[in-house]
Every structure is written in C-alpha cells, then in structure tokens.
Length: 253
Image (cartoon, rainbow, N blue to C red; front, side, top):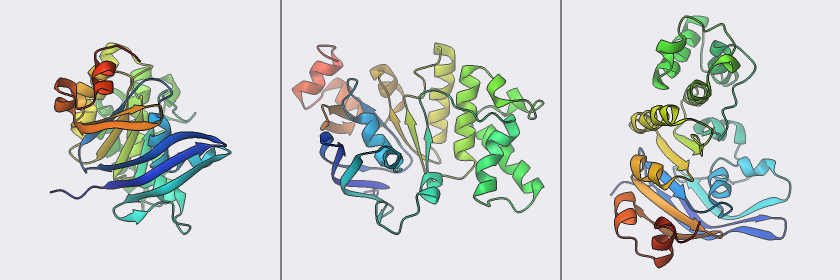
C-alpha cells in the first residue's frame, strides 16, 4: 500500500460565519491525478486552495482540522508559506503570465528561491521546465518576447512551466482548461498525464468527461461535503452513492 502524500483529517473551512467545508477527511496518493468534481459552489476550489494555504490570503477564512503533506502539518505555526507554495504549486483557471518575457516568467521562481547558482544553470532550469510543459519547441526562438503575447493555451502551459521550474512535489490545478478551446484543452490533458509520472496532480474540474479521461481517483463534493471518493473508473461506472449517480447522469448540477 502506497503511503499518501497528502492526508486531510477532519477539515472544516469557514468564511466568517459561513461554513464552506464540512469535516472532510481524505488521503491523496503520490504521482497520480486526483480530480475534484461537483456542482458550482460545492467547496471543491476552497478545499483545493487549503492544500497550499492560498485561503490564508482571504479575509475571514479559517481552517480547522489537520492537513499533512509528507506527514508535516502545513498549518503548524512554524510553517513558512513561501517554500510551501513552491512545493505545492498552483495553476489557476485563467492563465496569468507575468508581464515579463517568456524566459523571465519561468526564471522568476528559481531566482527567488535560489535554485540556480549561475546564469547557465538558470537557463538549464528554464529549458527543462519549458520542455516539461510541452512549450519549448514553440517558444525556444523567442524567449525574450512577452509571455502575454502567447495564445491562451500556450499561456496556460507557460504557467505550468513556471510552476514546475521550482521543482514542486504537488501541482494543484483549478479548472485549468475552462478558458481554453478543445485543441488547447487536449494538449493540457496530455501534458497532465505526462507530468503525473513525476508529480502528484490534483485538479478541480467542472467537466466530468475531463475527470474521467485524466484522473485515477475522483472525489465528488456537494454542498461542502465529500460525498464519495474512489477509483475514477468505478465512480463513473458504478458509484456507491445515489447522489453521485444523480450528478453523473445529469439529474442535478
């Protein structure tokens, strides 16, 4: 049995008085893709953001319970969120490249985290990250041009390159394809499958077809509750819970 890389124990999340996540416990295995599905407003993005403490940036948001990554409590008082967010990278719904060159977008993280000892080392890191995100061949001759000049799908792959440049262990993706066309989406999905050989990937998606295509495990959220969690194939063919069945067959959502 593989040890989980993420272990969440009795997690409750509140925005002020409103409870958004209700007592969720879940183990996430390494080097797999885990999909979080469920209707809008069900808590899946809130829960995802708790895994690298992005919710800390929201006023009035508080978390109860424990979230362990490699057996370390990431909410312990001594934990520094800067290295944590390098270790647990995040790719957002809308591509958000920095207003810098393609090269500087990818080099930014390794520079601030001191991962490169020389400019040649930095170039190697950038090239490796761009190759890892499937973007190198498309941009290698224009690394000095602005990242914002790329197409939407390329910008999203640039953001993935930026994330993997700091050598994370886990990559969180919050609906990474919702702003993209089908061709760009297919490229990102193929890329996720490839990246899962080296990284643990957790994706929030509103597309059940996407969850079925890319993930090994799926968690179904509804109204802040974790209704069902298990092997993706089993959940989509023979769910244990009637609410999962109703959601998957389109009776609500």
